Image (cartoon, rainbow, N blue to C red; front, side):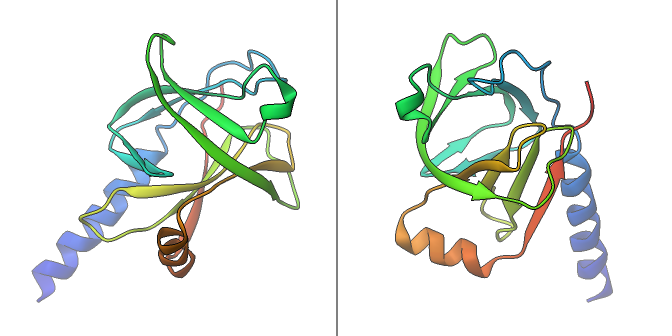
Amino acid sequence: MKQIYVVKTFATITFFLAFLLVQPAARADEFNQETKLTFNQAVQISGHVLPAGTYLFVLPDDINHHEEVHIFSSDRRKLYAIVLTASAERSQPTANTAFTFARRGSEQPQAIVTWFYPGKSIGHEFLYPKQVREELAAEKKYTVVAAGF
């Protein structure tokens, strides 16, 4: 029993350290909030699972569609997903990108719940189908502030 606890604790610590490797690119443009992120393990986002890798999170050029987040490969050659969001608020902005994740069971990737661009108190809450949204609401959440530039 003690060995299982040690393995789970080690896995949890490893997971948290892994997400500290999320590295944003330099602020390309505050209008489209382009952010480059590297995940060292798969993450879930609104009906999609992104394998470990580097991605660009970008808002569309048309301001009327800023409820969408486009997720591209790091070189912008492949569009992985267009996901819908709602506005999310937080009391204090941070100087770096901040993502909130929902802890899921060990068999499911962690789910991205919110994204805040550096210096912003208004961000993006990713929309999930009702059943998943209810599951995520019951899960513990944690926020990762990306390392500096």
